[in-house]
Image: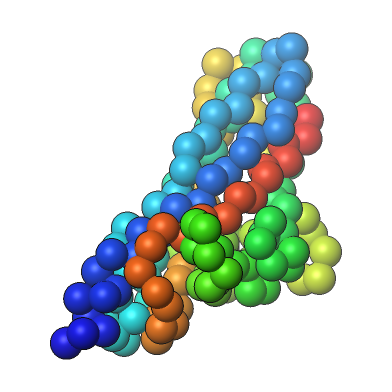
Length: 153
């Protein structure tokens, strides 16, 4: 019982930094949050978030969306979140599909990027999926990581 109540206070968040500037395109995103984590559940914790790209340029530009490695681990697999004010980490990853079959990255080392032609006046909504494996016994607290999103036009 002690472990279960201890884990109820683990709060997880990822911050996606969007780095796109273009006179005729706009990019927005927000943080991903796993919420409370309980390693005793035995099941994968999952969440998702979106990046929205809209352009007014004609003809429609081909837009590529990629991500950097974890700021904590410096790698794509596994990415890691660090406890605020501590040294403990939790492994997780970001995927381009809900099944977790393609790690989202910059195209290197087997990672995948996403691309599409963004039609003027329409938004391209990119869904990013995040998964956190069970069974990681950590100290309660807030765990965070920062990923930079690279949007190329």
